[in-house]
Image (spheres, rainbow, N blue to C red):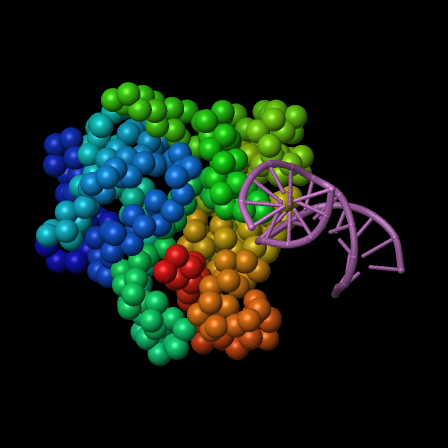
Length: 313
DNA sequence: GCCCAGGCACCGA
DNA sequence: TCGGTGCATGGG
């Protein structure tokens, strides 16, 4: 099978499963590495032998899928474990995975730039095939941006877990419970007092509810021209939301709308990574960062993802 | 007991 | 347009 350039070339339906060929470069182990970075993650589970189980919602109905790597065929097998397994739904599940794992991205073009960059070149060799693991759902991406403003990543994961397990839908399979992210319409009906016991600050509770109300009302969605019509306009649209500042907007544009130039430059993780890679005594100054990232123009999102990855090297 | 961790809104100048 | 402050919890 030739390398797929679009998802239509990549899918082969096969009974109750679908085979999704992936373009190259793509590293399944690197993807798994990202997906297993927290033990508190509730929106998917990675098994000891490297399969991924995730509860999707396809056309408002649950679908529990299992992803397995088929390295000799350069692809992923997506199996329906529970829920309605109609082939059209499996096709949509494959589309979700295609988006989730960033299989549309032109990683080769990023590599051509990064190969000439002293900071990035070792990273792309060490983590060859790492793509930006995304958050396909806009509401989930914005919520995670807000929750991720938390003081530590581990506390952010605790908050997400409580949020999902309190307001999300779930399904039990072979004695284990799987969760999907809360429906914005459910969150839209809450008040801040409902979220305070989960240890959200009053501000963050109100931010989440505010975003949920816009998404539920239809005034905020992934397909809208304000978000699709260019990076600058998308930043303006998102930062108009209460609780979404420059960092959060760029984070969501990187991981959900997949603008390659999205750059959460205020990110503490980026600063730590740069400090480590350049052996600095203190976190880099704005001037140092500017000099460093000038050659990355247009590829900042990929550079950021590789910098984050370098933190656990 | 105290400080600090990260990002955002708000306040006062 | 700023610089400073409060917010949340938990680890050192």
